[in-house]
Length: 154
Ligand SMILES: [Cu+2]
Image: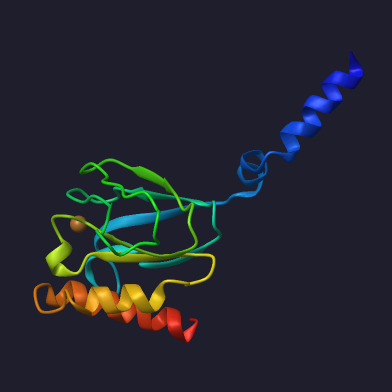
């Protein structure tokens, strides 16, 4: 009896999901009308996490959501669409750079960038997002500024 309980515990410990749940960290990003540096802004707007960590977007001020930007996330990652004025928690399951926007303020550049592990897709995502610049000037500018911070390693 004791032996079978022990071996069950051991098998659970060996399961990758169990291990990553046990060590994954939880992060929070606030959705704000303004902070010291900008209007309509995620805080922080650049976040470095480990693969398997979770990030919760908190509707601190009214009128915001958080959603993935199509095409600007690691290959094979799951897109997400948070509801207005509701928190949403995502798990960063793939390594790489994720770009996030607030839908109603995307044209005003309300974007955030999350790096899970290494920024393996940085050059691709940078190139793809630069195609948006002519249509979404502020969004493109803020994204490029955040990507530049990643490549400088700050
Ligand atoms: Cu917003």
